[in-house]
Structure formats: C-alpha cells, structure tokens
Image (cartoon, rainbow, N blue to C red; front, side):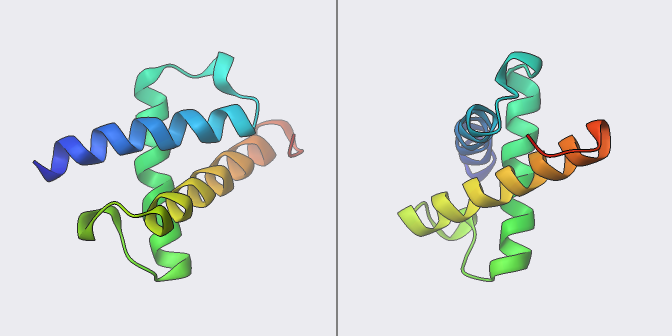
Length: 84
C-alpha cells in the first residue's frame, strides 16, 4: 500500500512543482511521479522532518513540494544554465 501512496503523492507533488517551475508542458505523468518521489527524498534529507512513509500531513506534503521544486531548479540550471 505504501508504494501506491508514493506514486499518487509523488505524481501530485511533481505536477504541482512542474507548474510552479513552468516545466509542465515538457514533462509527462511518469516524469512528474519521478520528480515528486525524488524531490520528497531530497527534502527528507535536507529538512529531516518526516517522510511520506510516516503519514501524509501538510508538513510532509509541503516539504516534498519544496524538495521537488529544488530538484527542478537544479535540473533547469544544469540543462539551460539558468533557473526560470
């Protein structure tokens, strides 16, 4: 059940992060899920305030969103040489 939660929350978080970073037209559903899951992992390492495995709260959701935005900013920086 935890894997399905990861996919759903990762997809939503990745989609919202791609909307914020204006990369939604370039990404598909699968890439949104990957960005959301990797972003949640990065945020868990940086902020140390829980993960989605411990339960979905507003704090873990927002932390995952920030991690996904950071991930997309790094990807944009490497790919284009600037952050949008």
